[in-house]
Image 1 (cartoon, rainbow over the protein chains, first blue to last red):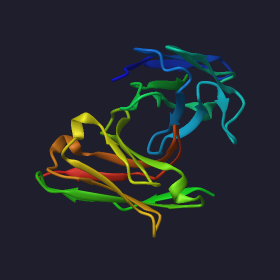
Image 2 (spheres, chains in turn blue, purple):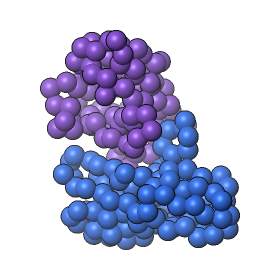
Image 3 (cartoon, rainbow over the protein chains, first blue to last red):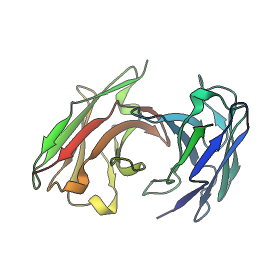
Image 4 (spheres, rainbow over the protein chains, first blue to last red):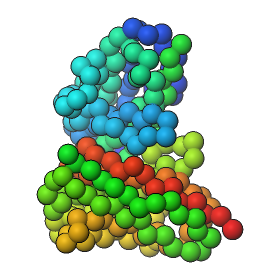
Length: 107
Length: 116
């Protein structure tokens, strides 16, 4: 099973600041890495697919990069509505797995 | 637009079974798979398994093997997840999601509470 480790677990950020969340895979997964945002009491929402592909309707301040074992989700100019928990997910090999999540709080 | 609508909350006793439904609309049901993901209170996301809506092929998380069954009814574009021999640690919100690698659309979630 591929283990995904996110860092940090928690981040407290002021509005307009840049946020970087990393996701490290225990073995190479190519670009089969996706990012989701989950707000309290809501279903997860797809932000980025296949490491860096943007999703229609997702603000352009969200971007992704990486391949192999190391991936990054970047939020440029954080807004108050971005307070949420962010998860990475790999679909390279079964069983699919998720990272443990990174909670982003607005200061 | 793509929609996945799940059945309502359930309360079950330990040892019982639960079957959650997920009705899809807004796309060709058999062109995508359905994954089930659960989230225990205050915890992260746990992948439970996947079913191809095209041919019914399945793959389940090892820890749930023998207790979970995923099925689809293509005539109604509905996916089902049945979990048997429920335990207290199965208490969670259960989500279905349309998949083609990424999980692009999610149901609203179904809370399953296991309590004596």
